[in-house]
Length: 213
Length: 213
Image (tube, rainbow over all chains, first blue to last red; front, side, top):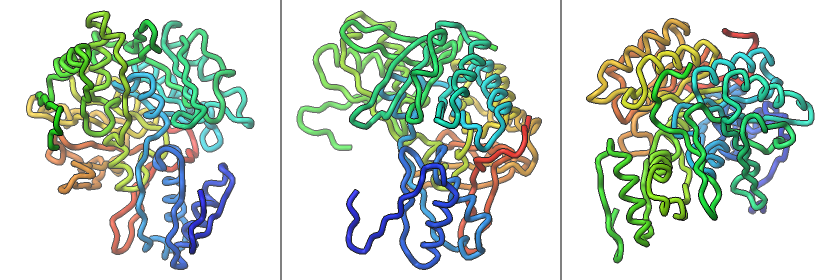
């Protein structure tokens, strides 16, 4: 993006969220109008929570700043819209990153969500520093869900090289995901509609026939 | 919205989702270009799943139709952005309507999500035909969450008469919600930042100190 006259741009590493938030607030406290830019929705596993954390722990003057959060299309909604309506009924959004929470808690949340029949949208499935977590999560989900459960991998949806694929839970593996991938794991109510000459539709039925847990 | 030349508009009751989807597909199969309009995101508790259901169960010719789903800002993202970042970490979206699933399953999902530490976004909390469900859900959540847990009620956010309020779980009650309300119930990691002269910010910390379940 070009910088307009009077603007300055401050790039930062994707992992340094709190430092980025603190820098933005410090600039704002000095009178600048500051935009913190995130892809997707800043409120979902992104910068809005980091900015709030810094406001809470920072100087009292930061609480006087006028903060506006602009919502956006978070990755799970973009991927879901490309493929049908897999989030058409109850679902959970879960980050697989164990940088800020213990892995045991992630396993507990996977168990709770899958066994109660929620569809799962998995953010941050893989990174260079976290190579094994996604495979472990899939292994965990296989305890609760049938092998035929649809799994959707959506990469960089909305960008020029977007890629969306559908597999079954028994065929899902970590080579299909990277840092830019959002993974949706269906529930027992998630169905695939094959369409001659068109890509399949994946959707989650709004009706539940019986208690699935 | 005005009808442009060559357009026709077909209004329908909000509850007749499958009939509306079938009518849209029948028009499209006859060669019309059809838009099915939902508020928020059509993929989240809205029309996209109903359209997919009808494609699956309808005439084979409906599978040949070109269907595009346009994502949008679903209510929980709109409400979250107004108040801070309550969906900044793991969360579930759950419809409290027991029209299409048994109430026992909703209770089971409330238990599973709250005890595993997910923030909850509750869709369809109340309707004329479902007067007691929201109070029962809040009662259920009190088994798992401290009385001080933040609860956000967001009504018609983005519209002229929007209303957002924050209470604690012990003070939440059904009079605060109606059909147009989206309710966010925090987790143990959800915090309220008081700000002198400004409305409070509600956010969910990305960091979890210990297993909360």
